[in-house]
Length: 87
Image (cartoon, rainbow, N blue to C red; front, side, top):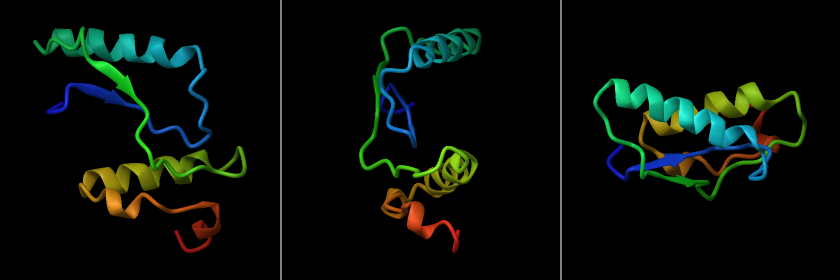
């Protein structure tokens, strides 16, 4: 919120997904109901963003993103598919 941006952590690195802007609009609508004006916030794909090798590992990648971001520790974001057995 401090940066006034929406950050999309996409483990499949698919910036062309048509549904992402739709989800952002839903979040904007929710925030407006909370008296937060996010209409001019930009959409950003932070880098590095660990990429999954298999389509079935998105839950683990999502959990790891959330864990690192909740700790405000982006240094732990450089994990990879090879790290999954220890995650």
